[in-house]
Structures are given as C-alpha cells and as structure tokens.
Image (cartoon, rainbow, N blue to C red; front, side, top):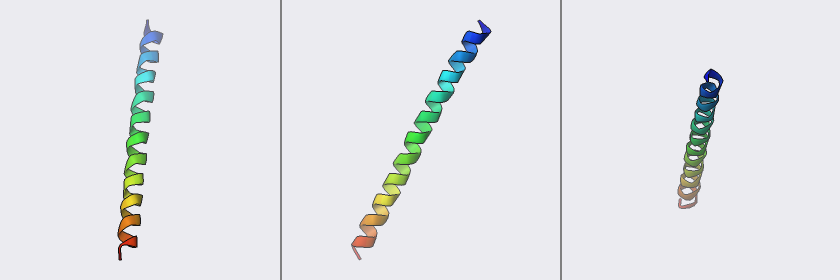
Length: 42
C-alpha cells in the first residue's frame, strides 16, 4: 500500500515536471520570437 502511494506521488511529480518543462520552453520560445521580431523591425 505504501509502495503504491509512493508510486502515485512519483507519477504526479513526473507530470508536474513535464508541465513545468513545457511552460519553460514556451516562455523561451516566445521571448526568442519577440527578440527576433523586434530586432528585425528596426
């Protein structure tokens, strides 16, 4: 039972990590895109 709970929490942690990575890469992508567009409009 305890092992099962640990397994569940591990899955949740993995999901949270994946979500954070996606959000992080999205932010980087957006900032790169903004930098690109602003630098090319001058």
